[in-house]
Length: 94
Image (cartoon, rainbow, N blue to C red; front, side):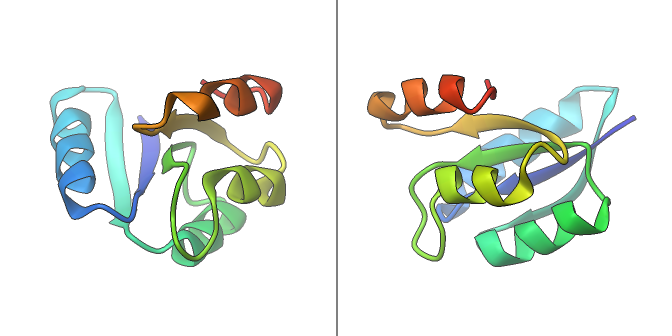
Protein backbone atom coordinates (compact mmCIF):
# COMPACT_ATOMS: atom_id res chain seq x y z
CA UNK A 1 0.00 0.00 0.00
CA UNK A 2 1.13 3.51 -0.81
CA UNK A 3 0.33 5.79 2.12
CA UNK A 4 -1.09 9.08 0.83
CA UNK A 5 -1.51 12.58 2.15
CA UNK A 6 -3.63 15.24 0.47
CA UNK A 7 -2.79 18.90 1.17
CA UNK A 8 -5.06 21.52 -0.40
CA UNK A 9 -6.71 24.66 0.94
CA UNK A 10 -9.85 24.00 -1.14
CA UNK A 11 -12.28 21.54 0.52
CA UNK A 12 -13.77 20.54 -2.85
CA UNK A 13 -10.33 19.56 -4.16
CA UNK A 14 -9.75 17.52 -1.00
CA UNK A 15 -13.01 15.66 -1.56
CA UNK A 16 -12.19 14.88 -5.19
CA UNK A 17 -8.74 13.54 -4.33
CA UNK A 18 -10.06 11.55 -1.35
CA UNK A 19 -12.60 9.92 -3.67
CA UNK A 20 -9.91 9.12 -6.25
CA UNK A 21 -7.60 7.58 -3.65
CA UNK A 22 -10.43 5.44 -2.25
CA UNK A 23 -10.95 3.90 -5.71
CA UNK A 24 -7.34 2.89 -6.28
CA UNK A 25 -6.65 -0.44 -4.54
CA UNK A 26 -2.98 0.19 -3.80
CA UNK A 27 -3.48 3.69 -2.33
CA UNK A 28 -4.33 4.30 1.31
CA UNK A 29 -5.36 7.74 2.59
CA UNK A 30 -3.49 8.63 5.78
CA UNK A 31 -4.85 12.16 6.05
CA UNK A 32 -6.28 15.03 4.08
CA UNK A 33 -5.75 18.53 5.37
CA UNK A 34 -6.11 22.17 4.42
CA UNK A 35 -2.99 22.98 6.46
CA UNK A 36 0.42 22.80 4.79
CA UNK A 37 2.03 22.97 8.24
CA UNK A 38 0.12 19.88 9.39
CA UNK A 39 1.11 18.16 6.16
CA UNK A 40 4.78 18.95 6.76
CA UNK A 41 4.60 17.35 10.17
CA UNK A 42 3.22 14.12 8.71
CA UNK A 43 5.85 13.97 5.97
CA UNK A 44 8.67 14.65 8.41
CA UNK A 45 7.40 11.88 10.72
CA UNK A 46 7.69 9.36 7.87
CA UNK A 47 3.96 8.56 7.94
CA UNK A 48 3.38 9.03 4.20
CA UNK A 49 4.87 7.82 0.93
CA UNK A 50 3.04 10.09 -1.51
CA UNK A 51 1.66 13.63 -1.21
CA UNK A 52 -0.98 15.15 -3.47
CA UNK A 53 0.01 18.79 -3.00
CA UNK A 54 -1.68 22.02 -4.02
CA UNK A 55 0.67 24.77 -5.15
CA UNK A 56 -1.17 27.92 -4.13
CA UNK A 57 -1.95 27.85 -0.38
CA UNK A 58 -2.08 30.58 2.27
CA UNK A 59 0.31 29.25 4.97
CA UNK A 60 3.01 27.92 2.70
CA UNK A 61 3.16 27.45 -1.06
CA UNK A 62 3.53 23.99 -2.50
CA UNK A 63 6.95 24.98 -3.86
CA UNK A 64 8.11 26.04 -0.37
CA UNK A 65 6.70 22.77 1.00
CA UNK A 66 8.72 20.79 -1.57
CA UNK A 67 11.93 22.59 -0.70
CA UNK A 68 11.42 21.90 3.01
CA UNK A 69 10.71 18.16 2.62
CA UNK A 70 13.70 17.83 0.28
CA UNK A 71 12.75 14.50 -1.32
CA UNK A 72 11.48 12.69 1.81
CA UNK A 73 8.56 11.30 -0.22
CA UNK A 74 7.06 11.40 -3.68
CA UNK A 75 4.85 14.34 -4.62
CA UNK A 76 2.15 14.96 -7.20
CA UNK A 77 1.40 18.65 -7.63
CA UNK A 78 -2.29 19.44 -7.98
CA UNK A 79 -3.03 22.92 -9.21
CA UNK A 80 -5.34 24.88 -11.44
CA UNK A 81 -2.44 27.17 -12.41
CA UNK A 82 -0.50 25.96 -15.46
CA UNK A 83 2.36 28.39 -14.80
CA UNK A 84 3.47 26.19 -11.87
CA UNK A 85 4.06 23.12 -14.05
CA UNK A 86 7.65 24.10 -14.86
CA UNK A 87 8.43 24.73 -11.20
CA UNK A 88 7.31 21.18 -10.46
CA UNK A 89 9.53 19.68 -13.13
CA UNK A 90 12.52 21.63 -11.82
CA UNK A 91 11.87 20.16 -8.36
CA UNK A 92 11.54 16.61 -9.75
CA UNK A 93 7.83 16.13 -9.05
CA UNK A 94 4.89 15.24 -11.26
